Amino acid sequence: MTTWQHIDDDQCRRFASSVELIGKRWSSGILLAIAQGATRFSEITASVTGLSDRLAAQRLKELERDLLIERQVIPTTPVQVRYVVTQRGQDLLDSLQPLVGWGQKYGTPAAN
Image (cartoon, rainbow, N blue to C red; front, side, top):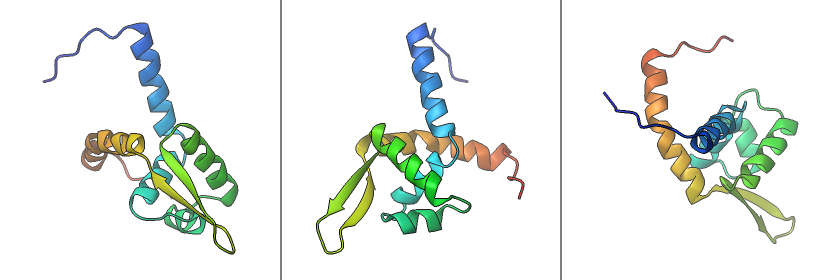
């Protein structure tokens, strides 16, 4: 059993912000898809079932803004854009592993 320490208001706000970030629809799926090798927009949308192009573009911008992914522009003809997980994003993915395990043990399957 883990002993919990007192959490002050600032820590509580940071925790809530983190949960909102990873809980936003498609964000975790996109981050995981990129970590697993989907680097181009079309690969990402193909990897995340049900993700529309519009929402993919929006979430990619948000993940980039939050420094979880990096958008790399490759100056070729035509220009190529690739996405990679940053160290900060990898740290988040690593911290989610126990939650994924919990979900596999106790979570209910998503309704289709």
